[in-house]
Length: 418
Image (cartoon, rainbow, N blue to C red; front, side, top):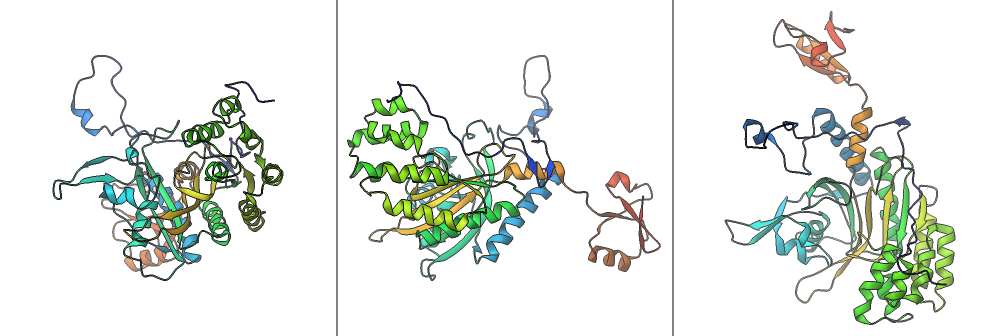
């Protein structure tokens, strides 16, 4: 029996919420960039206001910046080892360029303003994927396919995402240009898992989805009027059984139950596909799952659409124990060509590792910092740096090792605890 309107079926991948980071407990500590405001009196412009940062933006202090670089380097080392060449893109581009290479790019999420030089609209990037797509279609258009590219950088959005007020995030990802096959999808999922683990995540889980599921079914086996497709998508995404019936999607109700652990959920999806419309997609999901089995916990939510605005037949969301919310998404998509050019298939993923950076900051190991007194032997100091010490040289007789964060002092050519 269909559930009455408003009844929701709630499900989320079974990743842990309270966590362990590399075997150690951590606290989710965020640095507040803004100094406290006066408790009393009207808020007027005064000397301290000039140092306030906009809502959702913040600095990274030395330990946080070290953690950020550590996470980024670890992920890029993995990507490079699999043949993904790194590219860098500008923070600003013409709005039209950012919006024209991929379907579903949401320009309204971007900061936009007029370029005083060209008098054209500029936009700050909210997703580097579209920029990599532009590179693949222009500067690397003649490069052999499949083309493997990686990237990282800060992205900015007009508003935060859900309960997270941050408007600036680090994005790290990889794109496999020229292929959206099962083999390409499996490579990308494996790569995302490996990169996330290298960056410090534990207990990785992956949730598979079919972003074009409603489009595929409504075009054949389960027809829907064009005006009703979006409503059915929304009700499936919301897991609202009653709303789905009211939207004319009663035949789609079994999809709400084809969720959960992958092996069980894929069987329910296969039982639903009596006409075989989804046979190739189901076979593809099984093949991808078989290749990544044992590397992460696998779940399935075939009708999940949130965050998959431009993906095509395959998508996935990746999670880690102890990290609330997702760590990133990926899947297959198409890069739109210019006039008279066919779209080019691609597969990729984007990770947003800021929670890992916060966790690593909280449990960061002590650095080997060596205090160098005035008049120290520079050759000895160089040898100490060569074996892993971080040296901090005194600038005056009053400099104190511990005040400068040093655990050791150079004495007689040796590192001596302070």
